[in-house]
Each structure stands twice: as C-alpha cells, then as structure tokens.
Image (cartoon, rainbow, N blue to C red; front, top):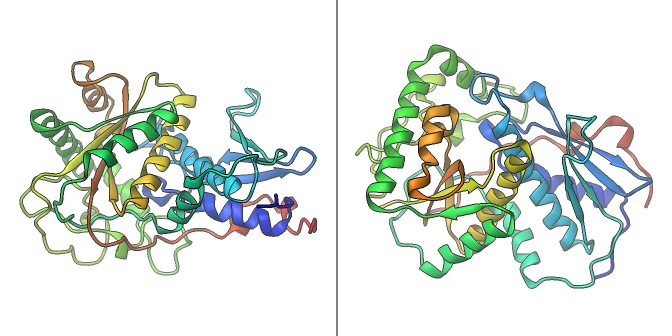
Length: 333
C-alpha cells in the first residue's frame, strides 16, 4: 500500500478512528492538534470533560486518551505509516498526553492490522447478558499476549478470586448509587434531549442482573426513563483484570492502549465486552482488587467478556469538534 500524504482526508480518517475509542461515561476527554512541520498528531487532555468526583486523579481520563491513541496508531499503520508514539513527551505541557509522529513509511504491513482496523468500527460496549458460552483458551491466551505487548498484564480469575472481585465491584456500585455527590455526577453524564454527542445516551444503558451475580453499573437512578426490567445474566462470567506494573500517569496511558488493543482483538473473535470500573473509583477497593496474593501489578479495570449480539453504537463527536481550529482546512492534498 502506498503511503498517504497527511492531508485533510487522511487526518479525518485518523481522528475518526481515535474518536471510536471507549472513554469513561463516554466523556471523550481529548482533543487533537497537528504539527505539519513534523507530521505529528498531538493528543491533548480536555480536562473540562473530566469527572472530578469519580476520577479525581484523572487516571480514567488517561486511560481513555490511551485508548484513542491505540486506535490512531492502528489507523496510521493501516494507511501505510510506521507511527512513532511518544507518551507524555513534554513535561512542560501537562495537557499533552501523547504525540504520534507520521513521517516514516511502514516497510511491512502486518496481516492483523486490517482486522484490527475493521474492529475499530465494530467494537461497542455490550451491557446486556451474554450467552455463557465459554471463550476458548487460545483466544484468552491471545488477549493476555496482546496486553503484554502494550506493557500491561491481563489475568482471568476464576472461582473464589473472581467472586471476590465481583463482591468488591458490588460494594463499589452500592457506594456509587448511595453517595449523593457521586450519583449527581453520574446523572450529569446521562444525555438529555438535544445533548451534545458525548455522555451516555439512555438507549445505551443496560438492565440489571435479576440474580444479583453481575454488578453492572446502574444508571436507573440517574435517568428520567423507567428502569429496564431485571434480566438474568450469565451464571459463569468471564472476567479479566487489566493491570500495570506501576501506577503513574504513563502507566495509565499504557493501560488504556492495552485495554483498547485487547477489546479490538476480542472483537475480531466475535467476543463482546463491557467494563466493570466501579471498584477502581474507590482507592481502598482498587488496592484490594490488585492484591498481590492474587496476581501482580496495579489493577486498572475489570473487563467482562462473552458472546452475544453486537452492541449499539454510542454517539461520538465530529472530527471538527476535537481538532484545533487552526488545523481545519489544511489544504495539503
């Protein structure tokens, strides 16, 4: 494939891929700037879309941006570049979380790149029950290897350890729904009529587990519509713990890249996913989730995996909403 010029059309494709990444409460806390002199796309935090109560240290914000960086990297490779990703490239610019240099042509087009690129547009969060069909061990091994390639760890607890993590998540969910400040913040992210294309649309909210086994996030108290009727979820869920060795901002970015890479690979195998982030929002529960007796590293998120229908797309901002004004109409075709 011939390398593309970094013109308006190429930039539109790259940023559209980045915008398809998951983010906490669909906050999409990012914006982009192009340095045409060095063919570098800068990815910057948009902190007015942070969650100061739920995410006071902006760990989830960094993970969200990391996921967008991963999608941008995949799209760049698909278009013929050999992208160079630098995380936290300038300590004097705290909002600059990543820079992707696009001045080298790829010498090899990896066979998996096309599949990952296609998965960007098909990956959606699924908050409804899965079938319970087991995921083959070979697929789980590939997901663990994918996380490791992004400097993260992925393990699949079973039995008592999985139950312990579900109990931690249930405890966090109870705290979130009974704490009026946190409940108010969550309510503010549920979209109303004529809302902008970020936040959580009511149609994307799923039911609760009638058996109480799966502590999915309950937005029913935060939305005006009637709650969905309780539904039985899978009885033997597949849960993954995504962790990093350390717990600094650069590790959170790596965690976001690993998370999205894992989700894309899962999508190529028709495996659906949703995230259980609640316990990560309470420091003592997050520490307990990363208990070294049960596996190494600092827990960043729990991932629920399984088979079922493809999820519903969540609204995304337009490229024009996330690109610095001076970068519009580049005219370098």
